[in-house]
Image 1 (tube, rainbow, N blue to C red):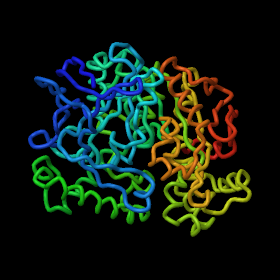
Image 2: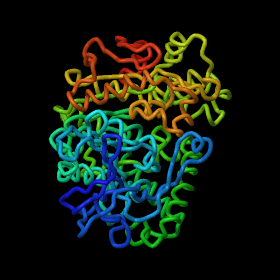
Image 3: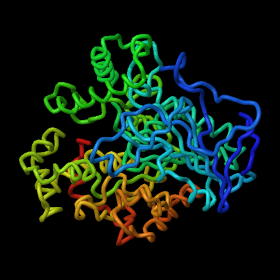
Image 4: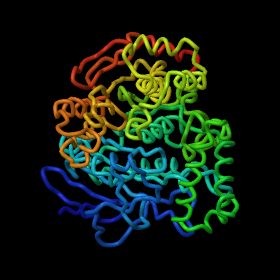
Amino acid sequence: MITVDTPQGQVRGRTGAGITSFLGVPYAEAPFGPRRFQAPSLAPTWDGVRDALEFGATVPKVGYRPPTSEILSEPVVPGVDCLNVNVFTPDVGGSAPVFVWIHGGAFVNGSNAIPTYDGSAFARDGVVAVVINYRLGVDGFALIDGAPANRGMLDQVAALEWVRDHIAAYGGDPARVTIAGESAGAMSVGTLMSMPRAEGLFQRAILQSGAGHHVITAETAATVSAALAASLGVEATVDGLGSVSVDALVDAQRDLSDRIAAEAPTGAWGELALNVMAFEPYIDGDVVPALPFSRIISDGASAQVDVLIGTTSEEHAFFIVPAGIVSHLTEDYVKMVLAGYRADPSALDRYREQLPDASAGELMIAVMTDWFFRIPATRLVEARSGNAFVYEFTWRSSLFDGALGACHALEIPFVFDMLDKPETARITGPNPPQKVADEMHRAWVDFVRDGSPGWDSYGSDRAVMMFGDKPGVVLDPRSATRAVWDGVR
């Protein structure tokens, strides 16, 4: 055990194997009672010594359903002090660079208690790792009359302000902060890069399977909130939704999300037919001033921030292979999806040329991977070639007879060098290659420390580092299908 003096008070952590961890340290007060649906408070203080030996409370969330629940770990820790951070440090007396991880989960799931997000390997390699919680779903992202907008994003800013003001007490350098995240976490990173309130709180950014395109309009957010409130028989106000218990509100959120998913393809929910996430950051003109991508590119937001960004090769396999959908798709359906994305009618031919032996389901995976993940990442770096590095994770899971491929979320245990965690096998299958984890984790550490992961920036050559069975840089991979989206995405 070790106790450190911090601006909040004394904190007791656990030391072992050359690193020290502090778990569940609050960066804001509990967001319940009179603080429900409000902006995060200042970090609380205390007298005496606070134990930080166990994971803190997780935020209210819907939880995953099968088959996703069989692949992804989703722990629930009871309690109200859910706006907390976990810190893993090599030396409480040092001044190491800082890696702040923002979890994914479609803005409705996830937490810093997920075993794969253990920052010990970063601390082992000389980096302070901070893993945060933030409000999700209705509490974090619903448009509520009388409540500040985008409370989940305000939580993330508050956590970064906590890092700025407190991390030195844990051995971190507040002037060398890298924010990172995967999926909704990466979309959060892209949003933070566009937010005036986050300026100066970080110097580098890592975006894994997410970029700066996934926010919705305030109009759509208001429509969703009105439908939620109507389903509960209350007004979409702080008092109205605040009169509903936390559990009942989470249940109503789940039911509405199911309804939207079923009805969105008919056009009933506008942009949600394409964006699919009902509760996520929305453009409010203040906290989120505009589409993050547009502010990053057009307005030069975060122009001095070094960027590492990438995707997995078959992101969308995660969403349709375990559910058994992939074998039922037809090329006519893929054509319909491409038309919905406003792609040229010849687009499917380009994908067929690239994947001559692919089934219709595999073509669908390629199309959806590009539209939702790969092309948004490409667009972000195209205007930032001087300080932007791109990767692709190509190693394929052995699960579902190999059909899961290099799917969404598969790269996370490699980045964290946590292949020995039992939960990892739920997505990788048995015996994932430690060599790939060594290479990928080292690149992330190097980027956090020096601003370069070890290969050339994207530039005019479109250099992309491949992590997998055949590692190495490839120039402009799959250029024909990239061109499909010119002027569209």
